[in-house]
Image (cartoon, rainbow, N blue to C red; front, side, top):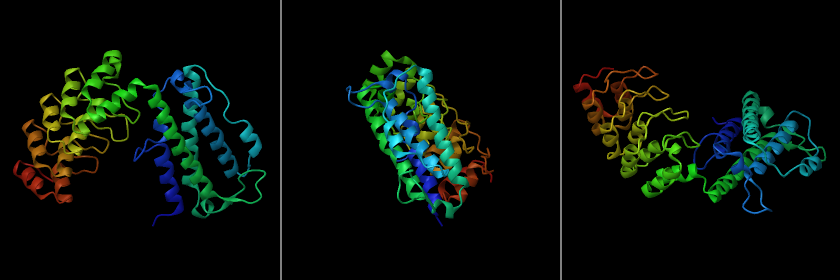
Length: 322
């Protein structure tokens, strides 16, 4: 049964760290230069850097309240939205602080008892009545999502090359990919804020022309994503059942043995998805049929456990074992 604490932990993950229906705050601030963070659309508007400082400011206030030392609301308000700029080291330091605050909230919430989460705290020194811990935490986590949207918009207004490049890969816009790469060739095998290369994104979204062009330009088909999945373009294409992209990647030398974070080789994933065509393609390229993933299952074991009968029969005929 889900508890209030469980829901709050999930809310924290979704608003700060885990990509879902929207870009979380932790990803929104990744990969920026100090100049981009300090940029304003007009003098009276706030910069990304100011937004980050604002978030840090109020997160610390909530933590102080939770620790039993409620801050002075007027002092917090008066110290908010200061002008800010500096060098790359200063910006990187603020991003680290933001990440550390996430870790502190996560650790404190994870170790809290359910009754404590549903208890009360004095929000500010001037507050006439206490606030519920759960409501205060829900508000501060939602605050992250609100400002992550603003940061995304400010990134878009600046036309940041990395954003344009990876968005073009998602959309399969080959002319735009070419345009950005001509000015920024270093992006070809770079990683997006959520840890994917352009090739992996184009493969997942099924844009065969973009995949072909990226490979022609030298994209690394063996690159492993820089996120919790730790997979390759072939994994991505198989997971999305992209029947045009998978053979294209394999024909261009994509590795059949690389395992993802769970130990899944492409053949394990093909068994999981239940696509005989992919299994045949991988076996034709000598994919190891009886490799065991982290939980000990072979591709046949995966197919049997998940009721993928056609794939299981195929693997068994080809020498697969449990």
